Image (cartoon, rainbow, N blue to C red; front, side, top):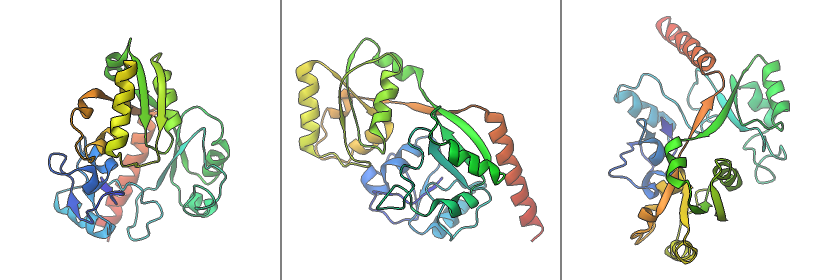
Length: 264
């Protein structure tokens, strides 16, 4: 995995080490992902690719690199929420897009649609019309996380792009969420905010629950103390409706890339 390391102080290139780095060093998402796969953080993506290759990487998945022109890609994928879609369709700061939508869709090889909402249908239809692939997917709570919270009264908090979706996901597991608090995406929790969350949870006898991404970032707050031991990270996975089709698509793209490299 190759990431820019948004929110981290290190420019890289550096291999992320969860035992040595914090979210303040490399960003919350790279730190979280490094628990599962090798992750390189580099502001200069070309340098990041060089480091990954030096570590014998044969496939590099670049996170948040769709608009980056420095690296030739063998496959370009967009992930879209089926409920929020592209918002008002405008470019930042007027809207959520980083570039106008039509030229981005022209470069899209596959679209991953998360959830069963209908707001993304127009985008999916445009990608399909350009011969792009559509892969429906769903967020699936990890059973162990649900079991750990069953029968408890919960206070949920999150500093991600869409906290409401997280709260809805927890409630959708028949869990008792009696309080919630939203923060901005990549929010750095202050000691006063941590103290306030702890005080409210203890006063009302609630169990604190948050996302894995937020949990990874909490460790950078000063004097966290016992806070992390009192917070339960709610783990989810992304489950594809047709995972074999996705594997076939990726295998074909990688095969083409190898053939192209061999032919010079």
